[in-house]
Length: 429
Image 1: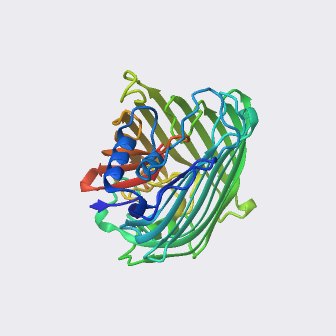
Image 2: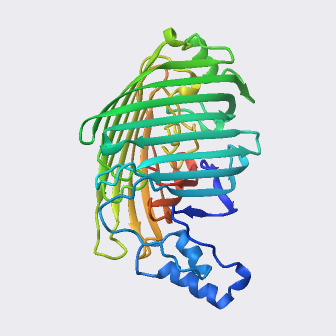
Image 3: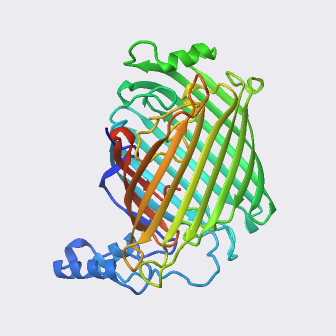
């Protein structure tokens, strides 16, 4: 089964990487000789004088002196927003063709050497199937890393393929489940000691216009709703969250210096606060980044990355669309090699590792290889009966060397012939 879960950018209208200081105006293309263009392009790609990104390539083609050197001092530049834009046209089997605009920005609220980077990520996608996706995800660090405000806000109209519950679901039994969703998740963390935080938040989901399309016979969606007294065309999940965070990464976009991330989120959804049903979930997100530099050349930023993502239902029955599922994590990145929503159940165990390595000496081009395994509990027994695996490789292209934002293009393979292209602005985890 060929899949393209993340909307691959088939045509980029433009690739812009912004630095706050003005870069000046590039020469128009009609003023550049072909021989000069090729020469400048070659210099931009293979120049070893320092780190390079796509904007350096553009400036080299345009015969414009880059003047974009990275400050090697340990101080961060205060409130300087490093941005990456990716407008273009995308395609996936779930969406058809789509107009896509994606933005990722990073900045620091203090210039101390150990300051954490704040991030803003959003996109707007409208598809051939009349699907609309607008997420806004932010992580804002205050001075001295004392507080961290995290948001995950979304609006989407998104008919989505579903395959049933548990590890024995079949790819041949897919049908479409249509729904609209407003998600408003906000969490505030306070430092207990360096890199250790406790947080409280509030998670709210409103789902409406829920209905099946092209379903044949009695489906797992129908059985789940009957068993758990669900039903109707709307569902609400509302309640506080309790959070624990340990984070030693200084750059969450691309932690080339290494570090650890450990986040635990307990979510009780309560009818007292407007939920359709009472239920409780627990998410444990753990990551470790281990630099393995090889000399001062191509392998200077080689890295091993490990990721565990366990999503458990402790009590009650979440709405079907909010059950743990592949690609259902906040950034939609679990399960490269499988279609989004391919597996779903009350409990999910997930593990992935990745080796990131340099290809060009100037950092412009790199690569990765990855593997993942996942298992979902069965609806009747609650046991983890089957394990699925995915694997693949990909290319990294430095989009903004100041925030270290990469364009990530991966090709993944999964069990039962599943495979596809996965594209991100920024690392997968």
